[in-house]
Image (cartoon, rainbow, N blue to C red; front, side):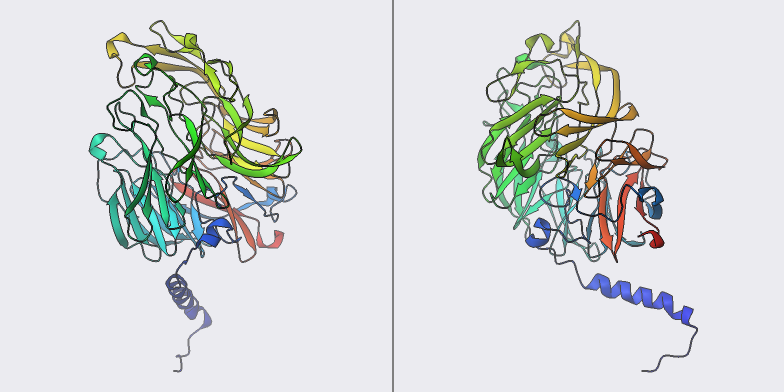
Length: 521
């Protein structure tokens, strides 16, 4: 068929429209191989790959040219609130990211909207939304009211919608799911007394429950051992077939006398068999927590040398102020070290677990505690740079006054805490010793940005003043920054499309993509 004669520019928009339609129709077809070894044009999971290291092999953007970065595109959600806390995922040139009740698919080259899904009105907790997972051409999204929705990645149509917990009991869901094989694995949130917590796996095709692991050994909500929220995604070792997950604080929160003992398996790192949910080992980073210090921070998986021997290691910087290195095969402790002011523990036991000081439990006349309730770090993702051996974490040295209130009884929060002082710093921790190699000031108050590092020696993050930062990984010096107009609350990602490296980070309700000018590549 002959096309009518038209000026060349007439056909350009039509070509782009047809190309986009064909491109979308091809589908994503994400498989296990892609999730284990993502190609350079993808970021298919919350962490990028399964390890949680958030480190890229890219070298196009270097310390020498990073100051040439320019804005490639920006996508405005038009929503206010807590801003974008999610990590975008990227497959086949399409980027997916979330805010509570919302999921967007945008063109990763231009930032143009492809489709938008809005979850139905609900009474869930809308504190934040961390992102989505993808497998084959299916997206998995958590509604705030404890529902998991599977959507078609090409057009956002709903495949199925299942409940993973009961919102009427006090549960909520904000996390990005983790897909392992034919399992889509999710945890739950909730801070009410007598609310047992768990991690569950569902069939990726049907949504049918496959297994459930209870954080609390008794797990029926009728005993003191409750709590242990599992609201952040874990990591996965394909060779060991183990999923590593962090758990939250016990309840009641500040009234430890109502729940004597260590309160297993709250505030712990656990290793679970990915196919059965069976507990393989557990390490409790904050036994008998009385300060609301979740241990849901990302368990980062690293293969490397430790004291002259190759080790499969797990590293975690925790909210309670300690940095841990474990053997991820056995759970054996290799390093326990504070990475800021910590005064709530008397020392470390033979297993490498901190020993709580009873004198630092909240009391009616108040106790000065370091760190504060927000913790020395929190949900924001760290990064591990294999070239330098540095664990890079957004931290908050801080102090707080903790009280119990007899009028509150031994239920719920059971007291109060009042922050006295805190500042944001990015810390580079030597994993072999736990010593801080360098730190970079981020400003007064609590930082919210995660961390991304690259092989070229750059670390990307954000400060408390609304800047996205590029730092020299070797010493923490600032190489470049740009103001976003609002604080960074998510973790940066990077990818290459058409030979061009992009760095994407959110500020408020806007997603920003940065790249070198074409002539600078």
